[in-house]
Image (cartoon, rainbow over all chains, first blue to last red; front, top):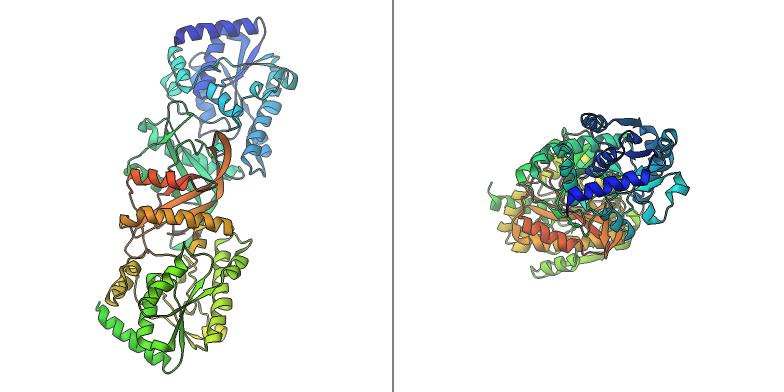
Length: 310
Length: 310
């Protein structure tokens, strides 16, 4: 595929579609939404408004880091603090479908709808890729950003039209486009991070305390495995507890799962055979987190497991 | 330590304590209760009654296998089917302490008390070892077979006196005694199996369906790791579920944890660095069990984790 040509075609298409209007897009800091942001900024300049929604489910320091990275590319990003709205919506939910739905609804109906209304934009640019569409249509996973494919008319439901410039690409193609666009290596090589963010890695109810634990665990796993070259690596926090010993006394503690996979496009994934030294070091560090006394390594390829837990 | 001398001393002590009376012991098939059975049978002959309680928490074919193994040693063992009593007692319980307590109560107050009464025995021989006592006293784990150390007067509470001939030994010492007694290699080298049996490996409520799953998983893990030489290896079934893909469709499936440890005496344990080929084969086999779509490997030493999950 000629990615320069792809960029030119998509830039033109965006310009033609939006015309003299206003468009908006939500940047998550992932490679998909980052590429959409740069493509749309090239196409539309000041006609584009880019927002970053802090949904309380982000990694350590992520909102500030993303806004700063785009500022240095000359692209202004508005940071919207919607943490309370998401935490309230997730309260009491344990079913993965309901959790994903709550995040989708809060994002679209509450936060994004409000931002679109305030901005006056009639177009929403979205980083949907081919794998998202295939898996959603197949019923494997409800992606948070697939609406048209599910038969939802966004103009009627939310008052804007959705443009998805990456819907013919898989993850490897998106990375190529990112490189061609001159995006910083930090973004091009950023490991995939799911739409529901850390909520995809908290089994059971999502609470601020659990998010703090999985956020700290994620920082440790990302630090230890940054040099691994793996496709994706993360920590998940289970709802189950197991018995353990702390300071000579019995405790019923939390369980962190480390997952590290190799994959070309996230459709299939193989488990990375990490060095035991690394696994032991991860275990030592993760079991120092308050309340955590077990560390497990996920051995399951995709299929039969998905990459994420929720 | 001179184990032949230990055997002579304990055999005499048992004979002296029981005198012309009747003693009973419950055999689980583990090395501890097997050694007690042979020691007591040497000391008491026909004055000893040995029972095996099928508590519904045993491994595949275990009750029949154990009874048969002792029959071939000339030691008669009565098999008591108490499956319904244990399943009823465990119904609805999710707290590990409550689960262990329900098993203890059902075993002592219901099944063993009944068997003792029927037999007329005034002495109960028990395979308690030093590690059990230390951990129970320290509050790390409530073992099912520690009563005297917890201040429970069994003569008052249950109508019999407890004799614990192995209470000065750790697991390695018990194995030495087993060898000196000429117990079959199958029993001497049998990996440790906890008092609460498979209930120690079902996180959350223990149901017949979950027991069937963890029983099948245990058979697979034991078959694959029998040649590993590890101190202990088993499967645990979590209560949590995680997303997966089966036949192209999304499913919310069960999670099996594989644990394989090296240890001298179960007080401390290190995780066995199994070959990746073995881990992948275990994963392939375990994820073919109905409803199971994840396989995790436990990376946690003891401490901070215990060996078991409940």
